Image (cartoon, rainbow, N blue to C red; front, side):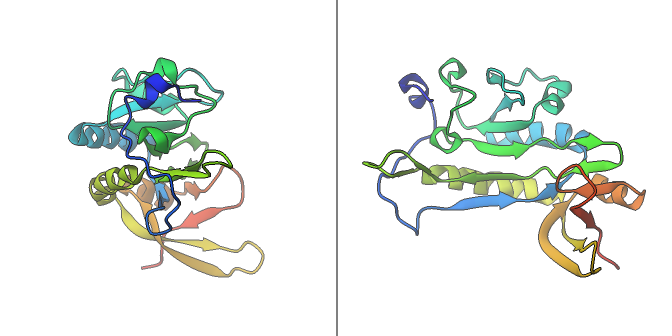
Length: 206
């Protein structure tokens, strides 16, 4: 849970009635190498004045990034915070990122030939109780849009998936890939949604 102390430090502008014109989700599927990630993500966060929170699996207390690149890559996901929330009051097992105004950024992972997708996104609303079903924080969407305007410049867009049984190909025009991910694929590496034999993405044919 998020304590009253933590709520006092997040970027919060609550609405307590569900309005479909306000509720929004942003989700971007991306491929980039760990080396690119540890260079680009801190630079983008610093440019926007965001603080980097490290979230691990198995769960550990949330901590702010100290500046060491290895810390970023050891995390499961990063949370980009607009303010320096007191993390002592945030339960790593039961927190609501949108309540704190946090952007989610998955950490790219490599396993053998596989480079796993590292998406980023936010959601503006969350369930509270039957008496007050939803709260919304539209400010987190605005923050993500500012982040995305900078982050998207690192990527090309459009990858292909292929059905293993039929060979049918589908073009995903919104899936992004970095120069490093492109090189990874051209050299025989596999871009995958998750580690395993299925879910491979291919570069489009020229």
